[in-house]
Figure 1 (cartoon, rainbow, N blue to C red):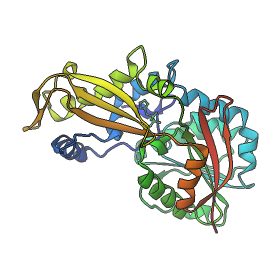
Figure 2: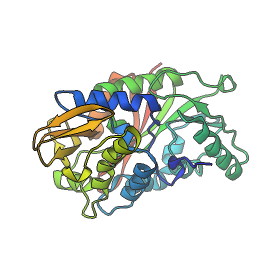
Figure 3: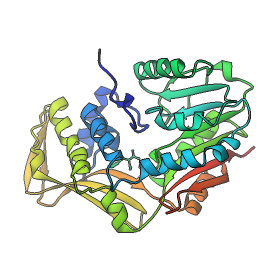
Length: 325
Ligand code: AVJ
């Protein structure tokens, strides 16, 4: 039996890719004039384990800060959810953050984890039911970036969504707005959405969080190349690429890149991809917002601000939004 890597403590809420698409996405990305690879492919077993290590690095503030906000502001956050609400978690990576909220939500009528991996969902539901015997857990196997239908048993109940981890940051603003609109269509009029959003801050703090001294984030980024070699028979020498993380202030996002140290040609499943020295593969965007800029984005997608909570250093935010009626 294989254990889904995302069962570990703080895996992000990102859907596992379907296998056949990986090669197509790699060919597309490396064949483009400006090379890129989709960030969702970071999370194989090795990548998920490296991400776990990232979340406890001294430089990587988001995870511990969000957990602290959920702990300290739990009662206020819970007060934003109507009594008897069903809580839908989009991309239920792990239940660590959910569990922080559950303590403050005795009136919850159901928990609905949504994830593309049915196997993963079943295991997660089993563990939660054991720990919370009174809470109905109704998993839905679906890709949360596309509209899906909720179990009919939820009809008539007030609905709330949960999207922690600043996963929203991996989507460019237009895509993020589209995703928030999809959430709104799924949850419906009057629904509440609780989500975690990383905040803009000093370049040095941001860049250190994505380029830590111990080199864990570098290994996480480079694992993408190892994964291409392992799963697609690539011949890439990962040592010939350097990890780069930079804050793109104009776009308000951290970008991660893999920069070719030399002029070279790599091969993946029979296709050749030439690199100039210094040419990069753009592997991730992690968009950073202010409370106001995020609220403006949410408003474009049909959500109005109820509340927002931050830590005392203003590093991270948790928002409560309401779907316009
Ligand atoms: C899981 C998308 C929230 O953007 O901070 C961590 C992923 N990448 N270090 C983030 C990540 C490099 C993370 N998210």
